[in-house]
Image (tube, rainbow, N blue to C red):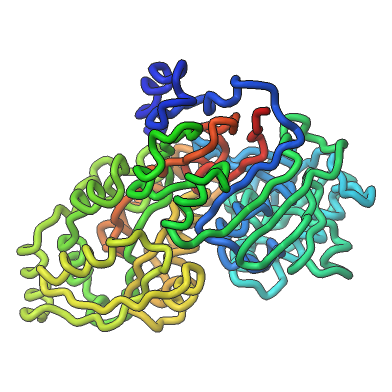
Length: 518
């Protein structure tokens, strides 16, 4: 399970966690108790990927936009806890109709925008109607289950659904659920400016580079949140530059790659907290591209990869990834672990059985520019040993997904996430608009069973296992690793926890409760 690995560590390290960077805590960094909270402080957050728009509905990556400051500018309807459960944020209560075709949720009544506009049902309706109809890269598709949104009371919203689904709270825990002041998208420029009910507004914004936020209200409804006076989000795509910025104290907190953290471990004033996440590396496969339309070829790809060696060498302390759900989250199936053990000879035999005794040439395949250095070289070498040849084409970390979805490349090496739920994550990787091969009737039938809100939790959980097993056995991709990310932070940063919202799915990017000590 996600937190068991660090349970003992937390007890052993509590007295020295601020000084020993290899110790993590399941409660928070020790800095929380080192001094009074400095409410005039600036919290500097480093990320390897920035974004180019402040409009949550026009996000090209749900996760990238969410974490790059938008989740503290805008309150959201729901949040997802570290156990993978959707809970209300602006929503205080929710219920489904008996037939599962509508959902009613009540809103908190103390959230508002700076111009005095209450964040009420009319505001939520305006946002959801825009989000589900605006031609956008991600959000419109994610809300396709909604047929109508009605304000059925001052603070009550009823959402009519095309089919029974339990996924709406998960969808609305991401950028689709961030709520803007309607005046912004009716007469303003949500691409370059922001107007949310959060405690922070935009001080400066350099698309693709840096976002600086300032706390400019003392009437925010969540009194435990928003302690730093300013938050700076900086995109630093180069791993070495990222490391240097943390080591120099230019960044207060950032997520490291496991292979890079050694450069800063042990430094005075820094704390490292390892966090098991539902994010990792995967090779996506276009099953329509020959010869990848043959199951035996896809199985050969899986047997040709030495995941244990890759994980140990490039992602120390992380978990080998054999399937599409990590341990501890819905869909995981213990029997699928090590389903495709490293076996180059078996890979060759499968290729020969499929009519390729001399191996296969896949030509150019897409590779994310954010891919861990060295990974592509290792994959290329291991594949070659089984007769599988390709040439990497490195693309921007966001563009790569669009290019793969267009059918330009037969495979893609990139980061992939379990998502805020198993269906949500699959929609961004295997859905009809994300993979050129689309889906199958079997997939759709299993997905319906997983998401049907009229079924019991146990029934949906069993179906999640069935769906994961179907994808794994049919080799819809080549899972590689679930990454345990070292989060490195100044010892003045408090309230960071492995049990923060989103920690085990997307990662603990909801920084609303972090503090900076004096």
